[in-house]
Amino acid sequence: MNAVRLARIADEPLEVAVHLDAVDDPRAGAVVTFLGRVRDHDPDAASPVVALEYSAHPDAEAVLGRIALVARGTTDALVAVSHRIGRLEVGDLAVVIAVASAHRAEAFEVCRDLIEAVKRELPVWKRQVETDGTTRWKGLGG
Image (cartoon, rainbow, N blue to C red; front, side, top):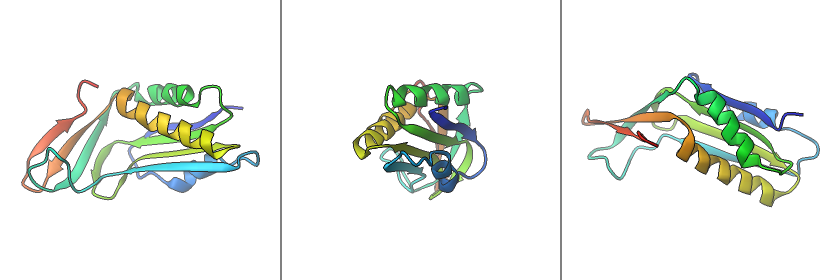
């Protein structure tokens, strides 16, 4: 059985239900989700944020699968994770993670390790768009 049930870079809206279905298993007593959404502000922004434009390296999906497998480690967790690319408006989902495990502590730990690794290692970059027309690249170089 493949422990990483879904690892996808997508240019269409992400669906939480798809991720929950991917990790559905009768042995799992805990399911933890993480939803990363586009917010309307950033500490570096001079004006409100209206959108983020995500770009990905061609190998990003394979990298995401490896990141998910490492985050799972030797646990019994099942993992589903997607990162969106393209232009996302405030409130849109940029990242969806679902982790199912027999126990909640393990599910929380895998989920947290996964999102932290995604932020550090996934070759996906974003251009922040502000209401005053200012744009700024974020996440370049790591």
